[in-house]
Image 1 (spheres, rainbow, N blue to C red):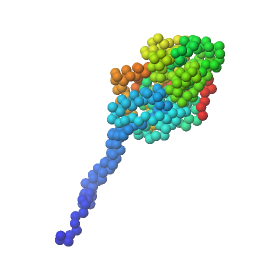
Image 2: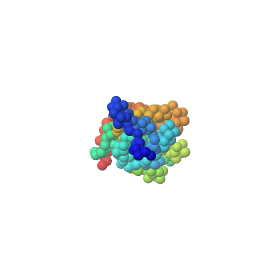
Image 3: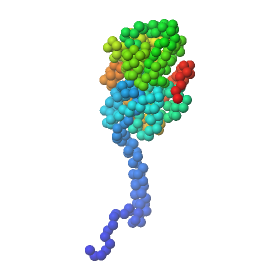
Image 4: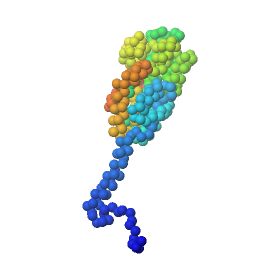
Length: 339
């Protein structure tokens, strides 16, 4: 207490006139500031991840999405929150994804409708090939052509025979206008030279319910919806739309065996908003890829009639580029447009 000024806070070395030390201190401060975002990025994921499903709950993508979300939660340590955004052939959920920040906390799991949307919408508002970052071609899954177990059609040939005799009288239901199942039915009609009447529903589950209620004759739906019902004796699967028979249904013909040239494969894929940081994309790709060798995961996929692919991002990009022109031709021939 001698009246001298009490010591103030410790000052950086620059105050002491030691310029070289000051420069080092300021440089260190700058490095610390610029390093913060990198540290945050390395910490991904640090909060729950939203997985957008652009179709109604209870459908095939919803089922697969919950299975994948469960496995990724175990591997990444964060929950995957399923966000069903149904409508407009999947474009509503995809648009929500495109408009989300590319920070790894919004992903989308969708079907081959990703390749169909540019073919049927004149003003989609985004281009899936440009405005989304491909993450993985997740699975190949068969589309089935299904009737009730007590239906008059015992075979696909029965359906073709009646369709030729009574054009437009056979109705088929799908998960909506512009869905992959809708275009599968349109392609069959085009290749086989028949006329079918499409009845769209808001989801695959609603379409199969309508089938059992007798409201429609046929449903185009994935094995996720139809395998269990066929095994229970409620449904009869006339054919699958893949290039060959599938292991889950060895006695069911591929439609191409009856209708040469008709193959309408379906696939599921994961994507993210454009600009997803490379480290996050690499981590996602690694974790998804590891599921291919997970015996329990593969077994659960097999019960759905699906083949897990979990590919690299470039495989999905290539598949998208390959399939868009195919569906553009089908949509143009069938006159399918959505606004």
